[in-house]
Figure 1 (tube, one colour):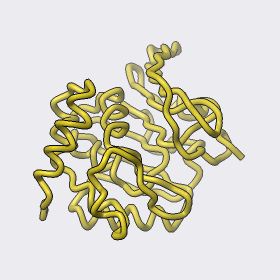
Figure 2 (cartoon, helix red, strand yellow):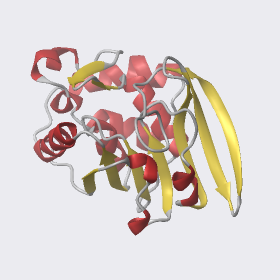
Figure 3 (cartoon, one colour):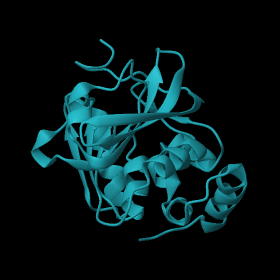
Figure 4 (cartoon, helix red, strand yellow):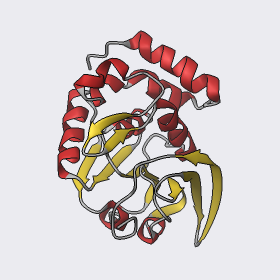
Length: 214
């Protein structure tokens, strides 16, 4: 994989991510290795390694690098894990999960965004991601259960189908709240019980779907 702008990624990790408390070696290495600029529209490519979200079209965004790193660390993907991502966006978050050793099924409701993500992933040489265009709030039972589930849009509540598709011991990370502001939560499944932890305020585009926002 052609992987330029290495120095910018190193600086991004050092100043924006490591300095703010992200410690997972696999997450830090993934953030150093994946070429974020290949997942950003050309007009914003020069800003790819800055500490803020960027538009990718169709009223969607690519999250700031720090948030991507935090959500990945909370999910704690391990080599060989099967991860379900709800909200593919540019494909960058899926690429980070793959760089951590996971296999990813990513669901995007907007067909043009799904196509864009597939193009970005191919250009970056990222495999092990299956992109589907459908309502992600209904989950994807064909490959369940999942070691981890990541929701990359703000949801009013955790969709019930996703809780059911989480493996025993698996983790689900999502921004939960209203349309304007959410709280980042992690849900861990222990048989039929679910433990919820909270990690502060975030802001995401709304999760649209049957079990999300209408």
